[in-house]
Length: 536
Ligand code: G3H
Image (cartoon, rainbow, N blue to C red; front, side, top):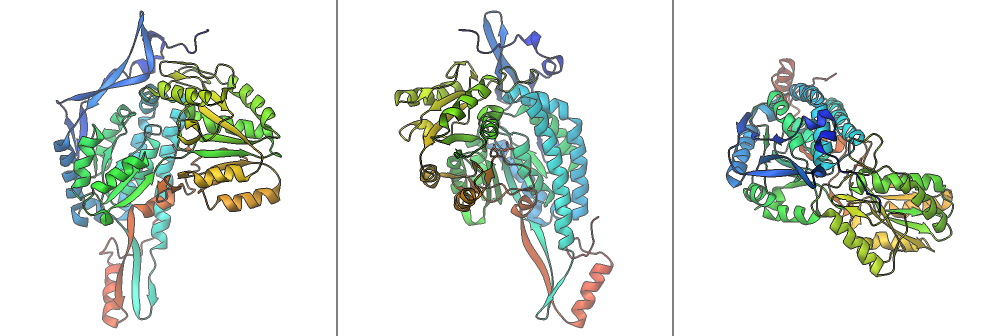
């Protein structure tokens, strides 16, 4: 058997990457200070195994492994910076917060190449996708600034009704705990952290278990851009560092992207759950449905990208494919050819598509899904499917899959693609209705009457129906959410601003004295809340 993928010697990797490691991070940001850590550390291993003689070494660094004490120190800093709404940050003008955020965006841009290199090394994301992740995050910040200006402009007016004059604006919710996922450790963490900050919340930020070191170059950018205590970091095992935060009852917003099981556990730790606002991005198993009249070239291209970009490690990935029996053979033939043309390699290899997986024992898990399906009658139908070597797993198409198999139900989050054929549309619909998930679906076809009927049904089961295209989150101005176990709350550039804030208003009875008071406050710009400033 030919070698599946060539794990390199450390001397063979590009210089810019080699010079980043080992990175032994010893600093953490609390209360505006970059403190130095002397305690226990967590070692970081790359999904890329570096050949060293006859063995391999993939240790690339380490980071502070904190405990409850440090976590509560971060909480204190965030609570004090919010100061029950009296803090500098929550009381700062919107224009002032926008200036800080703009400064942060430019600091982030300066660190682009360091972050890109660490994304490749820590989570095995291709160079192209790593660059996109950083650029998309900078764009997200700039779009968020524009969305806040728009929101603020719309709130600059007064409402006069039934003898009451009022100005309605949005005010920050308070102390926010932000935790993102390993697959988009920068982007998805920041799609909650940025709106939370810009709305005036103070933040405790815990990087995901994988994808930690890439945040190290950004600590100084946070420190430079925001008042002390507004951004604080904690590192370590979730149970030890997150449990005391939630149990304190002082977390006002939980922004978490991960599993529903962990989200439920965290929410239950809060002593007054009704006080906790949660914004959650959770599991999904988005299906593709290929109808008899689909353009198969489009369907194959979109399903390949949908199922295999970043090796299928996207919450929006296509994780099961239903293909009409009349076109199943043709679809599978084209699909297999397309997969065979994908380039396997290391994240920095030019034009690479499939790369090593960062999660511990992931190949064993994916192999167990494959073996389970094969033992129950499915076949591996693509050349080379089912092979793996350490952290590298070759894309594997399983057909025909049925409901007795784990691959039919479980969110594989990797390059295993379960496919089944159907006779009648009621079959994939039953799958979607019975599923625990309700994020998105992709449908491929061209009969507008049939498609209309299908999408009218699907919009009541999922939160985005993609016509003749893969599932995806972007563009980030569109709402991103899900039903059932897939999400709580909605994230988009503008929705997220609402997620971390609450409407609050100043109201006065329409009397001469009150009108005079309001006019004086406005004229002399005495209040940051009650004002008619129009931010350009
Ligand atoms: O992991 C889930 C991400 O939100 C997916 O984003 O569709 O842009 O890859 P994406």
